[in-house]
Amino acid sequence: MEIFKINSTENKQLIDITSKVTSIVDKAGFLEGAVFVYTPHTTAGITINENADPDVSRDIVGFLTKLIPKSYPFAHMEGNSDAHLMSSLIGCSELIPVQNGKLMTGTWQGIYFCEFDGPRTRKVYLNFLQPL
Figure (cartoon, one colour):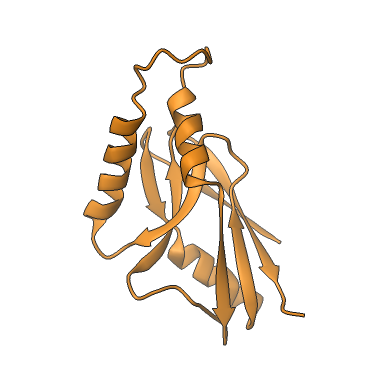
């Protein structure tokens, strides 16, 4: 397993971690199977989406913020219930196939760390799964 830290700079943002994940897969010499990308935080997430146009990630954050407004009268008293809900909707992990040492993402796909309660320092775990 590999662990890396990521520093968010905004309260809500998507951070492209594709190159970091690719670099770790390369350094590990991992050739076949899948890489499991996971974050252990209840107010963050991991997703795959388009990384060619930065408007896509801004649209995702904007839509989630409109869908789940911070102003809703949540019972949770910490003031970050919106972030918990966003994390649950997006999810905290992705499983990406690896073939011949390459992530099998689509042409326009990138792997994103989703910050919903920042800025903070967060962790991302990678686990390599070998075929039987």
